[in-house]
Length: 123
Image (cartoon, rainbow, N blue to C red):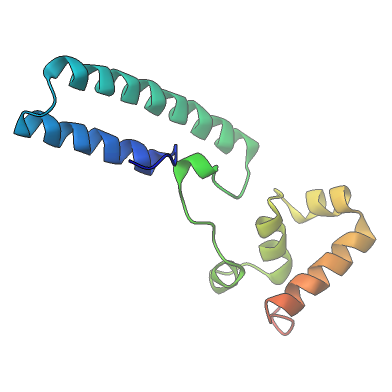
């Protein structure tokens, strides 16, 4: 068993427990304990997801074990280079990114992002 502490790992544990119950290697009391803990973790994940939605963040928390989109994926799905850059940095908007980084740093980092991702000629 790995120690990733994410929803993929929880799913693995729950299915291992189910198989253990089916083949008789795990008793009902232990399975109920695993199920109860699983429900607690899932309820915590629901709360985390609600907070994530409220924050309007562009990247999912690692707990959900979702792959982060690449710059090219974002660009191929209609994002401008600036929007892709901002999303990859984890900001909600271009304005927020500019305010946090400052105009000079934003411009410099965006130019480096375009160069590093070979997207200087897009939009």
